[in-house]
Length: 373
Ligand SMILES: [Zn+2]
Ligand SMILES: [Zn+2]
Image 1 (cartoon, protein in one colour):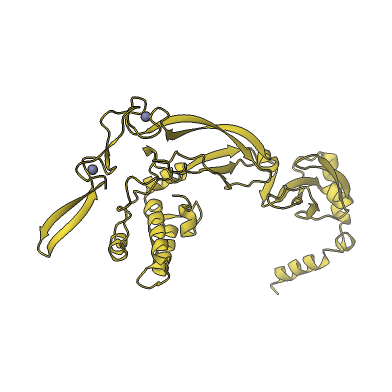
Image 2 (image 1 turned 45 degrees about the vertical axis):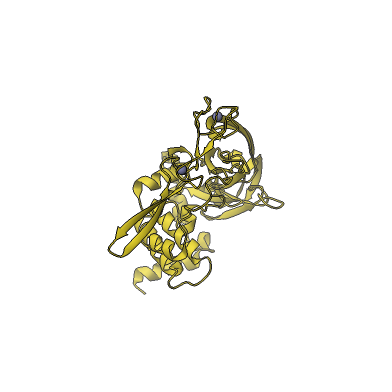
């Protein structure tokens, strides 16, 4: 679970990918990593990763759970994640060939705790300037009373007499193809290899307790939507002395009704009257930190961009900031008084060749198009 990649990333599709996109991406990658054709050492691992991602994202229910909780399955409390994803089809065959399956690990070995994912939604400007806050997450920790053993203080868990501590049982079956030996999880100890006679009363014998844990989070200035902060060791407690998992905080940034962001650059639109655009003006522009003056030259066209250097977002890694890009939009007046209309009619009657000297070629091209050239 340590470095479990995002399922969307594994398939190389966006979060809004359609079922069809997901199927296409999966087919392509499955062909690429199929261990029959790809002899690279990590092909099998890649193939399984792709298969697991597809199993989750192609199932509406699993996908929405994943979108909401990440690699955590709420049906299994805070533990589990999607390790239980169904490895049907190819997966089983390859487990046989490659001896995988992962069921044969020593049940008494220390085990790392699960990673947790927490989604945090922050304001636009909080992403720009950074934020410090406390969050409360429910997580499973080792029980303080029994130190995670699950046994009442003063007692110890006993080795399971059925599996002798291996956590595995062998089941022999006679089939038309001969004797088959299947291994499965020991039913006497549920695969733990241990039996706890006197259970710890705090945790009921499972060695773990659920706690609401407050964690201080520092969000760096310049963080963007979708960024993931990793807090080492803040995930769930490990088993039998294993290290804790990590906590991943996924940042969601709310949109702003005036500023738009693209990487470290900020975009905004400023309305101009026709008179301002034609005659030029000096206008005030809001930036993330202050108001600045911007000179609009006479004869500015609608859609023109002006750049305010260094008025963008601080760079997350590195020095300096992005820029702010101001797009001016000339707004046509919709309510005019009779006097204004009359003045505009006079203006239009004088509107000859000389007022459009710069746009001559534009008007020429249009006239030619009307003539059908
Ligand atoms: Zn057992
Ligand atoms: Zn306990």
